Length: 275
Image (cartoon, rainbow, N blue to C red; front, side, top):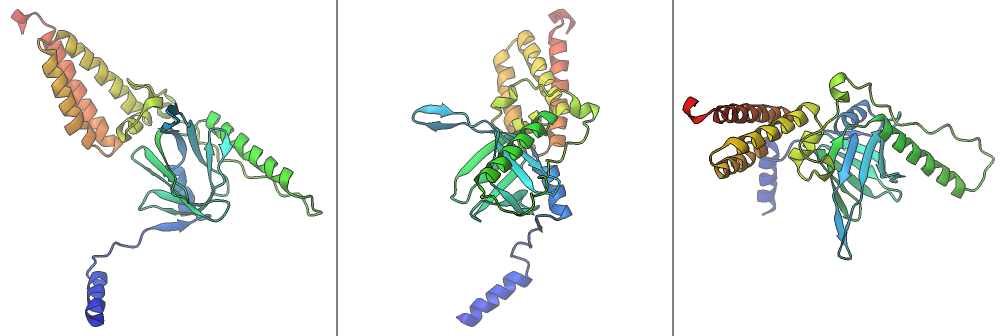
């Protein structure tokens, strides 16, 4: 029996059945800092919860990097006591240590994020935007308040004062496209799906969403059978839009759909004798 088990394990290993080793980079490495900056940093809207028969709005989670490559998580205006241990690029996540050494995980994929604490508590969030200067200021205030609180509770010692705490890395100067206001056809603060999160994180896609919404309203106003148009729109959302996993895919399907609706609405706007 033992020999058979050993043989089976050997076949799994050398036959390539077991998953490949994940790409995990330790805190402080250039790879971990670059990955966190490009894939995790940003402003997230935490999903609402329920307590004592009332809705609880937990607010925002801001994720930034300081100059030493550590990930800073700020819930509203309070720094969470988590420090970066490593990043897992295959899993699109960061492994974090709490004050007691417990492991927490922050994962962000396709505009949705999940923070899982050591005790199993899970918080879900939707990506809202990249860090703006105002968000950096919130993180800096929270960081400073946390350091002052630590100094106030630490007994005085004759040791030299510590060096100033590293500030969050400022966001690069936004391009004209990045600086453009993102205004889709819906309220990004109420975004509840990965698709809506991606729309709220891309100005071009947000503009296409507004264009499509306008074209759809136009078509409903000139159609001989609006019920048919509504069914087709629902089918498009389910079968085309929701099948996308990337921003590029969404841009393409939104462009095609907007072109189609605008052409149809323009045709139906003509008098029947000229159609």
